[in-house]
Image 1 (tube, rainbow, N blue to C red):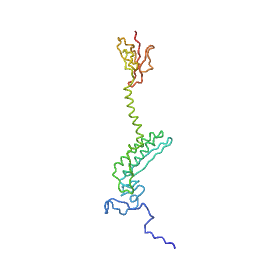
Image 2: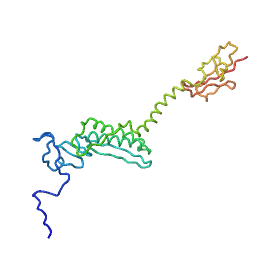
Image 3: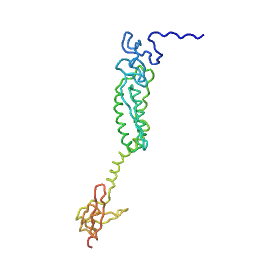
Image 4: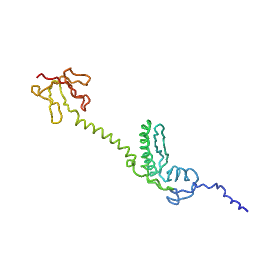
Length: 260
């Protein structure tokens, strides 16, 4: 004969795994007194964690508090398509920093693969700085129903960030280096003025122009014109020297042969 079901107490509902009492600050039992808690938004372990008292929110991942309401974002560029990712809080300090670092790190190597993603990715990374600042202001997490996430290495020490920063640093450092080399090496043609006299002289490796006194027998040419561009041209028998793309600007000069 089947055993009849036990009568339920008046007012008791079906078993609710999230209806267990949670620690609450204050009260007659001390700061960690676990007394009966009302069922509802602030008295249960719900999808957003433990709520020790009305108006205080627990981390959605571990239930610890204090927690900050913030949304961490990510982006994936898929050449033609793209994905916008987001993870909404509240988060405690450790879970929030772990989520920020993971999603930002993934965005740094997944977010550039598309025309629009080239512009969306830096905006996404900048938007994550606000939640990061909120998480860093929080006290260490306490009272959770599971351990908080390990924040791990700082973002700037992670592999994707180093891969991203390396070409950026090379570009930023390479531009001044190229300018410096151009200034040091530059164009071998001296800066000439109209009326000066020059001569070709061998320096052991190359034939170079050197300024000479116009009365010297070594003088071979007189500077008759300083065109701004090569399109301006020189007289038919003149020799043109220099360039109009040097590091210091145009070094063009029209050299008229001196009579011998």
